[in-house]
Length: 85
Image (cartoon, rainbow, N blue to C red; front, top):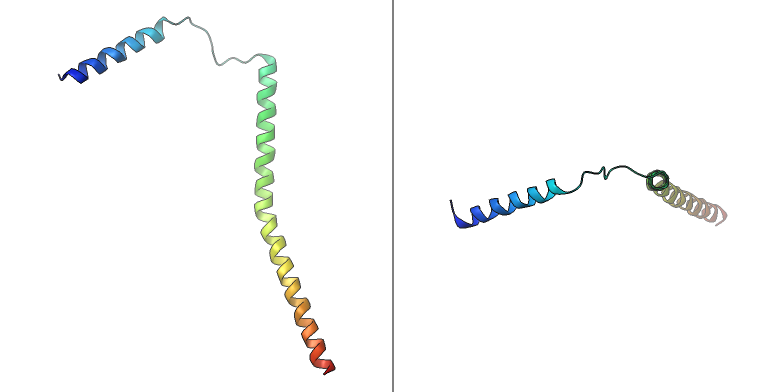
């Protein structure tokens, strides 16, 4: 084997020995206040996501409706001007 391969394997084994020598504790458990904060974060994230989806769907519809109504009003004004002249 090449020298760098031996060094990599030795370093990886030393790292695994270090990880296994750490005290066993469950790092994934939340305290109750941390759990409530996590739930609040998920709630705000979910509300923001659905608000974004709503706005992405609603704002183009609103802008399109504005331009269509504006076009119809200008067309009616032109027809009234032609009728008067």
